[in-house]
Amino acid sequence: MSAAYQLEKWIWTEADFEQMSWHDARIYAMQFGGNISLDIDYIFQWVQADKDDFFSFWVAPATLVFPEAAHVALTVDFRPNQELEIEDIRRESSAAGVTEWHLETHQGDIIITTESFRQVIRRPPTLQVGQQIPPEQRGACSFDLTPDIGFTESEEVRKLKQADFDLRQKATDVRRLRRQLDTLLEQRSAGVLAVKQYLQEKRRLEEKIKQLRNELDSTDWDGLYNKKKPRLLQ
Image (cartoon, rainbow, N blue to C red; front, side, top):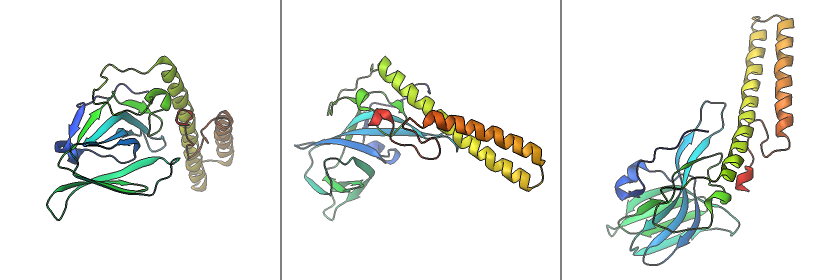
């Protein structure tokens, strides 16, 4: 897995809005009062080594606070067992000239009227197979505003994550081998390869793919183009 993510700062505000993105950020909880607070997973970076590789994500738990909100409007069609994810956050001015923050989710919108926001990163970002932090690592919902700068993953979590990354690498290898098969067929069709050479190389690639697929069959990876939900996120 990659080295540690270089976090620019622990607290972000409306002054940073243009460089921020909340796409696919999971909302775990909301707290209402004078301030409106959200417990979210904030994705700092999507990582893909090449076109055959699956994405990894640098993710951190964060508390997103809208202070002294004058008004909150929710039009969310949401079931308790559904995950609530942000598609985008837009900053707009109302007809009265006040600032509104439009939190667009897959289930509807949350509109918060206030001039500013503050987002506190509670822990250093960690590299994840999926877009969310595993519950074994994340723990209970929190609206804490004090960063845990010294946080490190437990040895158990590191081992589980490494196992998932190893399986993902095998799934990536299947993708690459299938691409090699496609290239091999193109070369044979173009007359670049003799029949015997083509059949030998085709058999070799197919045997490798079969071996990898057998290793992935009993896991949460389908070993080809799509990834099922990782064990850590179930």
